[in-house]
Image 1 (cartoon, rainbow, N blue to C red):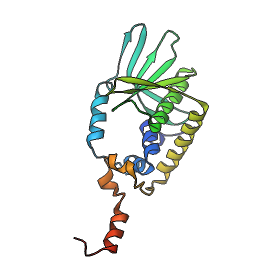
Image 2 (tube, one colour; image 1 turned 90 degrees about the vertical axis):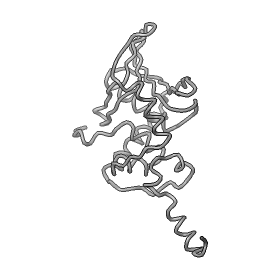
Image 3 (cartoon, rainbow, N blue to C red; image 1 turned 60 degrees about the vertical axis):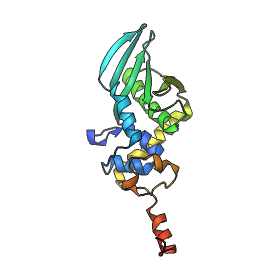
Image 4 (cartoon, rainbow, N blue to C red; image 1 turned 120 degrees about the horizontal axis):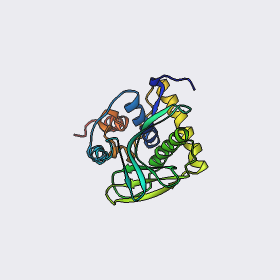
Length: 203
């Protein structure tokens, strides 16, 4: 695919989109960002792995903050940790804040990393892992054909979203209370306006 640097999709946009398409557009189209407790924790946790470096640990070569990309899918980003064992097959480990729990958006982001690494190294990568800072435990993620197809679908939907440059409607659900962009997004504005219309005398 012929594409300029501006056409490249950040890997982080995949996670943002699966969590909330409006959040993705605010960050990657409107270039809006606000910190809250969750984003501060995440930034602090990633500071430990965001300096490009490598080391060998128990016979495994470990690369931190490894730049990765896919020319075919027009993706670009950095992998928190990529391990290379005796078979030299890349094994990406995405670091996350909080306890060990299933987050499908994180799995899609990890699969995006796998697709990049497969193109870069010419190897089939069967699995990766999500590492949770609070519990200090990993959760293995098998890169199934279903996950691959979903990730490729998400990539195309994100590409369309970025090209159109429009904001999707807000989710206006439980996700919003954990989003640092809630005050900018105002997901419940319509509800508040309607409540005010229904009861204008309510102080």
